[in-house]
Length: 145
Image 1 (cartoon, rainbow, N blue to C red):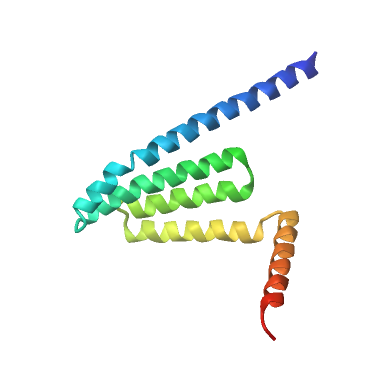
Image 2: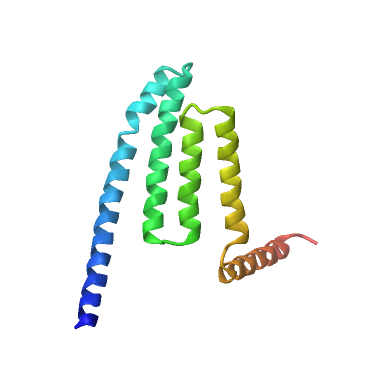
């Protein structure tokens, strides 16, 4: 009986996850379409820094939505950290921040990159090193001697 309940909960959670992903895709598409107004505002007020920051805020929100969608589809450390990076960058670029807040933001991004570089699972590091080695071999084959 417990196994049936667990299977039902697993299936239900998978279906709900797919529903949320579809809703998120629709929301991102609508956001991309609605990007037209801020783009026109930016074009009409090219000299205004505010117009550019307003446009950039919309773009970064859409990128965060796309990265969040990728994270829901493939929930691993890399995609979660990508979302964190976009959120940190959006905060630093769009919101008026002090020099200390900017410094802390840059330190936060550096920490995220250190995590991506050194705390990646060993299996993923092996895959990346094999890919780099294969890419290097392909480049060496194409180089004239």
